[in-house]
Image (cartoon, rainbow, N blue to C red; front, side, top):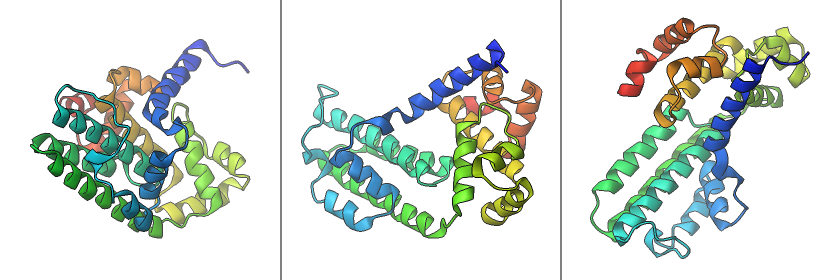
Length: 244
């Protein structure tokens, strides 16, 4: 059955948003990507090797400002954003990843020398790596649940049903329901709603969509329902969240 035009439009808008969020993942593989992958996997040994060269002495950085210090502050902010996205992909909660990124970008904004920028870069990278190492040691999910989580992430713009997840994972719906709660610590429906709210919060912070548009993009049944769910999890309305 063909999808209605409105549904197709909402799906395209969601895809556009997610592609923009993840566009940096699709760069060609090179030592820089190897560095981000090492942080993502909590590989402290590989990370320390990469940190032997100070951030401000690495070759290949483009000049983003006539002021050399400001140029490296911009590159620092780009690195912080990349680290946040890789760590989210590796299992870190969105809010924690962005909170760390925001903190270090704010700290970098206050420094006055290249030496301080390099030192702060090492501190940030080690912080992310240490936290990812801790997360990775705790993340022992079955292949069925991993597949489920990926399906949910890819279909947040739709209404997601347990039967669809079970069909994609190749297991019985009732078994999946029990397994998901056992491994993730919450029912499937709760996890889906939390991920929708997390995505909505990031869209409010980092994109220009209105709450009404976000409610439609993420397949909430109505704007009022979206507002009530958002407030239940984050303690405030979408509008107040964006203003804050």
